[in-house]
Image 1: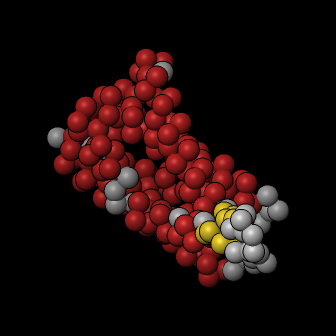
Image 2 (image 1 turned 120 degrees about the vertical axis):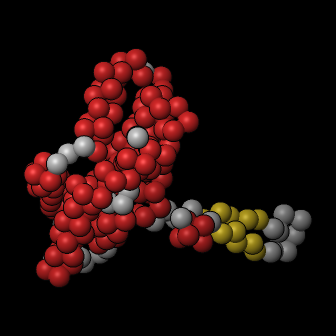
Length: 201
């Protein structure tokens, strides 16, 4: 939001006469600021939807928490299978986001994407909080740890690249994204269950 704060400036000009002073406020939202606003808008929308219509999603909430408990107790073969499944899903997501960045509608599409991510996070957090009470926030945080440290730079790079003018396809950058996706998938399969055990056991 730093760019947003910088662009909110007042310009004062003085002229001769009783109504000589006036002020104008410039608002120049950059693409990053719009994405951040869309993310928080989606976060609020997901939270409200989950709280007001929770009875409609009760079965899905129980199923989701059951998956978390199941992932904690997977054996090595099942974890390897989970890794391939997550890697395939993340690879598809990265590919789609990369293609979006190549289009002329990259900024509005990325705004929709970040709103969707915020909506999902707000919805899942609210559902877990209803089920777990005060332990809802710790459980939610453990569901995104430690893979969040891989996915956050991954999506930041994609968003910033997609919003640049004159962007080009760069093989090293794309390989870096794939490496981050693979590391995040590995964290989900092998490290994340360790963090979940701390709050689910």
